[in-house]
Structures are given as structure tokens and as C-alpha cells.
Amino acid sequence: MYHCPPALVLCILSCILDTFIFIIKRI
Image 1 (cartoon, rainbow, N blue to C red):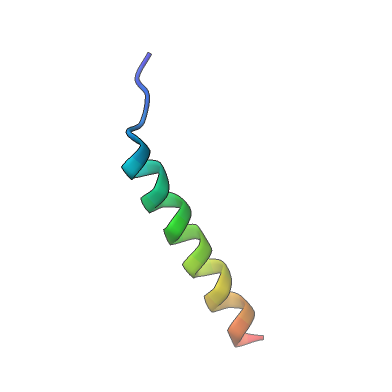
Image 2: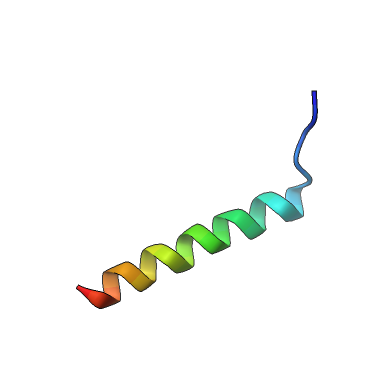
């Protein structure tokens, strides 16, 4: 079973967080 490297997980979480903040600022 393939496990994502921690760096990739952090990158994905950061991307989601940036998108979340972007949506909040538009409201």
C-alpha cells in the first residue's frame, strides 16, 4: 500500500487552507 510522503500531505493541506481563506475573504 502506497503512503504519501509527509511533504506531499503538507503541500495538499496548505493548498486546501489557502483556498479556504480565499473563499472566506471573497464573502
